Length: 347
Image (cartoon, rainbow, N blue to C red):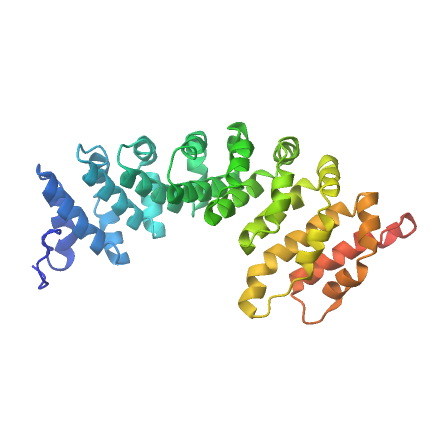
């Protein structure tokens, strides 16, 4: 055995390559405390990527499926924690997807143990780091939506992040599950993390025509305009992103103009981060705001208002020190605002 201080909460660990196989054999013991101690030791080991490779290549994953149905809630929770560590690396994520773990994890979303449910959501969230994982989870989107109504704050943040990743791939399952209405409720949550993730998920839903339509029909835009004044830059940026998409439609343009959003967007565009890290954090906010203004400039009322603000937009489109992406978006905004029928050939 490796020479280390004895820890009664963990199983003894064999030396070298024998460590992982020895602990997995310990998982077959009938006594739940022994299984828990073995899982705790495995969780320690799997923080090492080489141990993850050994676990996957050694064919031990099938044993974990059995433990996901264990009668002991601590065993189930620890097994999910182990799976979360496995999914920290691509090889682990691929192994879980190819080993058909999703049906088992889906069942545990309703587990009586809050710790187990939390760890399940951590695993699912990690799986969406791969496009194949996000695609596989699309079938679970309706259930994930339901869980948003029940779970604690930190689990809701995970759920919203997972839904956002899935909806970036295909927004239709979430839209069919009344996703816009549910996310609208979360936009007013007292938790900054929930507001941030809810706005990000809503932006993913707003990419398609049906999403834009629902955002306008379900009176989401007034809430989003308020979020443009949020203290968190990412909340502001995600809200601006939804407005950017909604303003593509005629109904979205009119609602935004009625809400007098142009002065707010211009204020956001005029902001500069004093430090480099501030500029990077605010880049998405400025770009989404510029694109929203560009869409609003396509409406006569919007163009009239923005023609008065050309000096501000001109500075962002011409400054040599300006970020290239922001400068390009500002130039496009100026082109749309100053467009007249006589210079269509220049467009």
